[in-house]
Image (cartoon, rainbow, N blue to C red; front, side):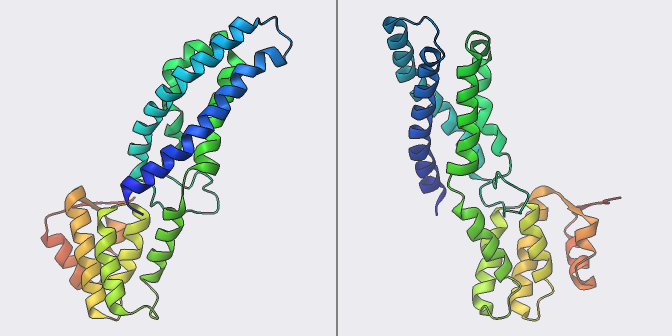
Length: 221
């Protein structure tokens, strides 16, 4: 799934989520038995027609930031599945003064934002990428395929991607090991730093190659 397609699907799924939340927030006041006139209720719904597009636009900017993180492999205790998913609530920060006037309605909108990122936001790429990274160490996968994978994941530059590449750098297939080392070198040159714990997992020859690149080595201790 391309980044553009992922963002498009994310926005399409977000719009009905926001509409449902805003409608619920608008109806909660009359449901509580407060003295709310039909005109006031209609005003709340009209504000929703303005607020939902604005909230969608602001949330889309956050989704752009999250787009580069969607490949983070999921772990059993990582419910958000996307690193930094909490940022989805950032568009609500400017609306904090509204929470003083309508705290329950505001809570509904915040809950909808969190429910969106946990249950609605498309996370198939995270699961797919986890499978792809596991295939790097699978000897049943053809070496040509693993070479392509090792080169393709270099652009992600996250720790869960680097660790499988470090393991693949010691693969029995020379072309796979070389492709993994090339990707690691590109990542560490871009970052300008490499963890010594990762460096020590490489062969002496590969460690010499990385040190020759002039990359700063950071001690984990």
